[in-house]
Amino acid sequence: MSINFEALDLRAFVAVVDLEGFHRAAEALNLSQPALSRRIQRLEAAVGAALLERTTRRVALTTVGREFLPLVRRMLDEFDSSLFAMREVGRQRGGLISLACVPTAAFYFLPSVIARFNEQYPNIRFRILDLSANEGLESVARGEVEFGINLLGTSDPELTFEPLIEDPFVLACRRDHPLAKRESLTWSDLEGQPLVAVSRTSGNRIILDAALVRAGVNLSWSYEVTHLSTSLGLVEAGLGISVLPKLATPQGDHPIIVTRPIGNPEVARTIGVVRRRGGSLAPAAERFLEMLLGTWRDATDRRNQT
Image (tube, rainbow, N blue to C red; front, side, top):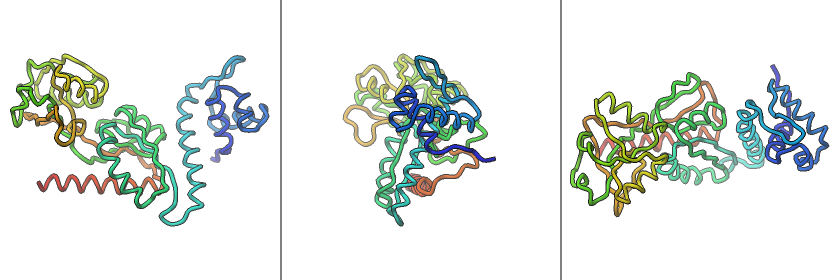
């Protein structure tokens, strides 16, 4: 079955949404309003559903339109990048790589790999969506990005997960806290301490709570925050201690905060690559993913040897 629409139909749809109306969109695209309406109608016919709700005063996205919009933006980005890439040759070819990544991995892993990749392919651009675990999975499933770096836990049969590293949960506390004098801890050592936790809807919190329930450990949380970085701020201010993935804690010798391993049991999250089952990657994304997987596996091998 053929899908009968043009790139300008997609641009017309995005223009109507961004400019909040047909009149301004028609002017921006140098089209008459009837011509613009025909392009929207052709796109809706190809999709098989209305994308826009039209009234005399405003234009709004339908439910299908809201789902379709991020996919259209990505399609246009990749289309424009592909046209530009045709002017390049060999390793100087341009392109766009779109990925969704949990913030901790985006901060600690991606920059070094992107820097290496850019040395070989300087004209390739990146669009990185640093999202929560659930939002990242949805972004991959919708096709808004080519792949994601996320936490183990998806039950979506349309997605695949390739494990990369185990990231253990550790204690984060001030250097002057009594627990900082210990080289290692058990979960019982944290009882009675004011704990800073991330939201119950967070992928990290879900993993941690499930593991502690299985181990019969019950911790009392004094503060609940949305972002891991906020929990570190409360710890640094001396308001409590926190249990965080090691990647989310300060790396190197921090002047105020230290981390300590927690055992009995050790709890870790698995970080890996999420892809659409049966989907194929653009050549640039395929090359970048190969470099990313190789870098992480090399780092894992070095840690295992030490």
